[in-house]
Length: 349
Image (cartoon, rainbow, N blue to C red; front, side, top):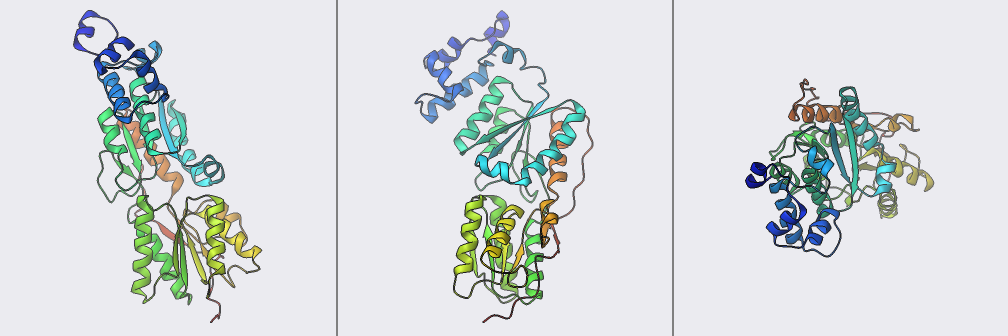
């Protein structure tokens, strides 16, 4: 709130925001509702002005600005079908909610499709005082979110390897590449020489780290990747990538997937093509989700403690919001869990 308004005991109005930002009141409304045809520069100027003046669209939200909402945000940038089908997020949310619910906090879940929509959502959260903090998923290259949350004064934690510095704390297992290195060493030890990798989106930080480790571990063994294919984590892309690899000349004898859900799709695709897993094809996932233990064959995967990382992130964010909670220690790094979906390399030419 401006100093003049504070001294006068008045709350700022939409007209004051419009005047300070040099726009109409309709433009202010469009900026907060993410409607209309405002330029990004104009929309950002309006939101920044509203934050500076302490104005939000509703009187009830304004009244809550100085009080805790006891709500924390989890914004996921994924297609809705991926969120519904990928148990990774169920495990993550279970870990977060397990810490929030006993303390009277709730989780506000939002799905977004692109960076602009996600950043606009955080700006509205801050301007309207709707949440006390946010859990950021999927650390990315050139990630603008930590600096934005810091500028907005909204407490936040970023899920990802702590091997790096950002404007907000990171929560996750370190040495992200160590799990992938174990995978390669395991497969090479079984005699595999044609090993492919079905990765996630290339802009994600963990995609880059794991690909580098995959290629480095193969190089140390005197090998090169059979192929590295990037996907958006959806079922169609996982199936399509697997079919392309199996149709290739001199197909791979092992495929490593960036998460367990895609690995499950890979096993099903291979079996529909008449291949036996692991006799004809070894498959490795990443996450160590419960579904990997329910399959036949059970899935060899990398454990990255998804649920525990969610709990640790929630505790740290609660502490940043002023709650007295103890830190939850995490394991030092992801670790390989060997089950039945990997076996000796087939005798192929």
